[in-house]
Image (cartoon, rainbow, N blue to C red; front, side):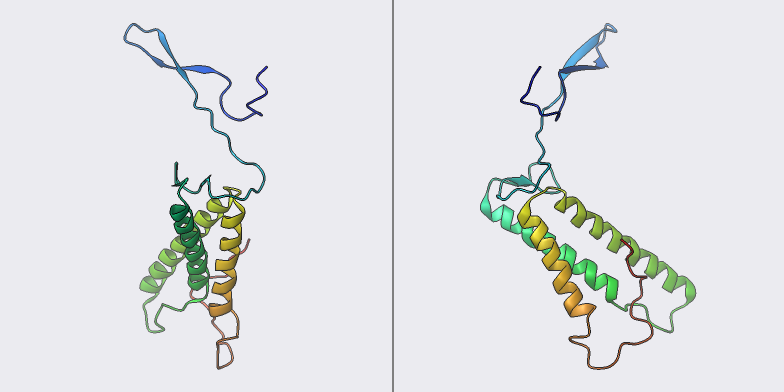
Length: 157
């Protein structure tokens, strides 16, 4: 029994292709270890295979990207981009596009956090927090909040 796997990756070769004579060809699975607990360090894979790699600059770029994705999700959650005199069709299409964009970015942030890298988790929370501070809280609003606070319904998670 191989104790180096810890239940991750394939257990050996698989037979998944046929050759020209009708026989099966053997192709080994690639063994990839994935962290299942939070870890600290710059050597992580975030969102894409091999990214950010082992270079510190790329890791910092990955953290900045995750921060801005989370910040942008909060902006989309609290912005008003639809004009009051828009037709129902135009307003509905814009609202649907904004919803798809917000949910897509929120899933990207979630997938980045699922890298289990502590730095990614912290910048995702910081991005959501600062985004809410600027766009969702009353800190920077001079008048009482309007009845309608957003073009999009609140996220329910």
